[in-house]
Length: 246
Image 1: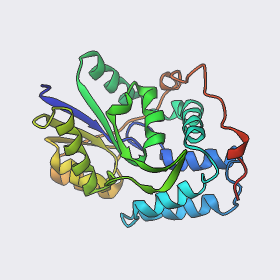
Image 2: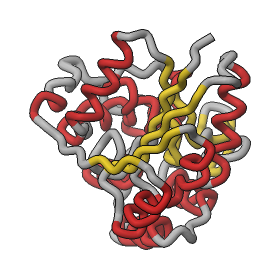
Image 3: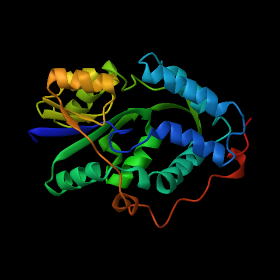
């Protein structure tokens, strides 16, 4: 059994953006969503997230409602293309180097994110993470479609700790020492669960908390080397039935 487990938040930790916000912008750019207020509403929800008051169920209900005409297969294809086209240039060089170094050493790693699982799995694949090395918000299925509801407990705030513990138990890593990297004060419960926490480009509030608690503070930047990860064979676009939602 591995004696250490390296755990990463994703948004603003391994990449310099929020993958959910980027996904919504991608949907608007691709004409999948044409509601002129869509991005404004998403921004309002993200303001609540930054304040620690957002209900993740509300965000999923809003964002998945925009995909009601898309099959799950179409959504998955779109998410792969989004990751391949939009995210490589946003990967932090230091994060990529760390992940590659740990992979070469054979260490166990997992991403824990409060974004939708189909987004995070597509994005995490750019860094070499397998599907079962991602803990994220799982979306209920309704036949061939995704619903607008969450399956199980979402890995958000205290939920990240519970979801990680369940993952550790399922993978024979219940006794592993957890080392955690995150940018967000929302992840303080997981920081306190971890044996060691690292604050990546923290906000002033989180930086003060990290300093008070003795977390290592890191300042990461993106680079052209990370952008070279872009897949030369991107997935095809989703079918026309998925387009032009109001």
